[in-house]
Image 1 (tube, rainbow, N blue to C red):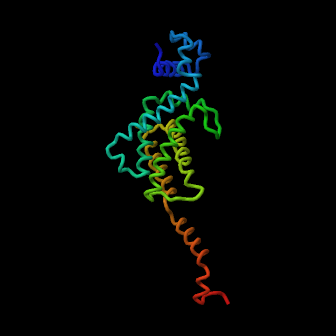
Image 2: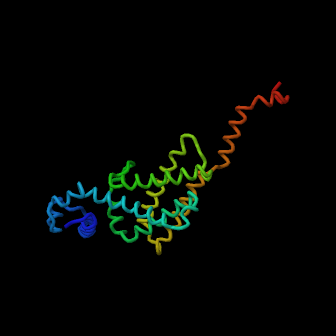
Image 3: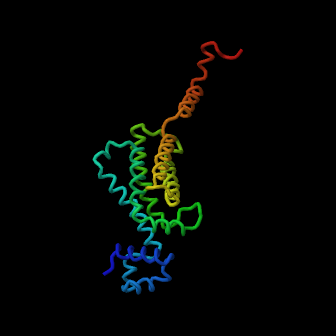
Length: 220
């Protein structure tokens, strides 16, 4: 009897051998000696198989990193770094499939359907760590922008994914470097900066500007 795991394994084997999706569910089911309806018990299409695989990458990564004893003591930045390092370590065992799956996606600014599940899981994870960062004052609360922090992290994940696919360095050490530099720069932008201080000072002057006149420094 087929299972989610057996269908995914058979699908990955097929696409990596043939370089493309099966022509039909019928052909795929026949090749794997299962009734066609058995396939539809678990998946609506081949794209939903890929979507499930990608979503599972994120789910497994999050479950793994949260088992670390030190996890509760991590800052938001450290939790993000932990996810990125663990995620790409997990992808190594499925690199051929990842390269195939990513490269066949159309070049578009919208998120391909097969990545919608992983995006939802990842952004939920990011929302939690960003909320923690805001509550601890590690991150700066910015009107209209704080709720976009998760989007910046998603863009960072997509960037590193494409970087990793093209990384030919030993042990993908360049990807590790890209993760460290990218996450640190991103979180530097999330934290309070001199611009925030300047903005706060500007608001203070706008509110209390009249004090200069009271002290005799007004223009004559």
